[in-house]
Length: 178
Image (cartoon, rainbow, N blue to C red; front, side, top):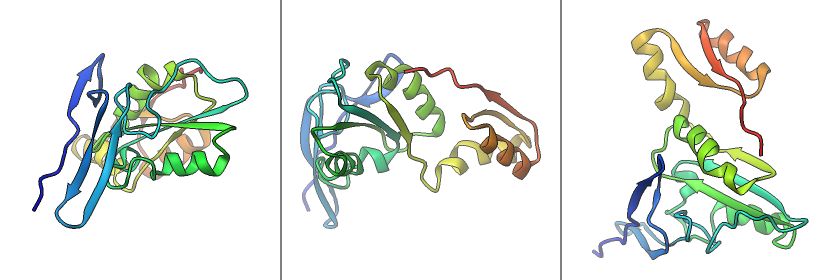
């Protein structure tokens, strides 16, 4: 059995990400063996750096999420972000990913406001996995019988969720403007 290389985390300016410029092999027993590449900005990515300045005529997409976006389980150049960039055409687009294992939805919003916005994406995708809603809100709902915070950009979605849980929801309106 070979021990995995684990990228080292750090906390800066309220953001949990990785210490920049790390490379290694992530292993889980004999099942997973994948290369990671932590870039100069602290994110596992094919891009060695996320430039804040946009390239003219390149569509920039940011993907925010947890381990599905972080993607240590696959080689760094094979994640959904890199596949999307290849599909759209590397000459026409760039896809930056912002993912940390175990991140709750509150961290997604925090990342959007305090990290992702710096890169002025044309489109932001927040990847929600099956467990995100439950881990972030269900326990609060069960314990307090009320959701006290819910960030919803789409008014129709807000109405649907409010109908389903049939409780008062305090919302924070969209303040993100790339």
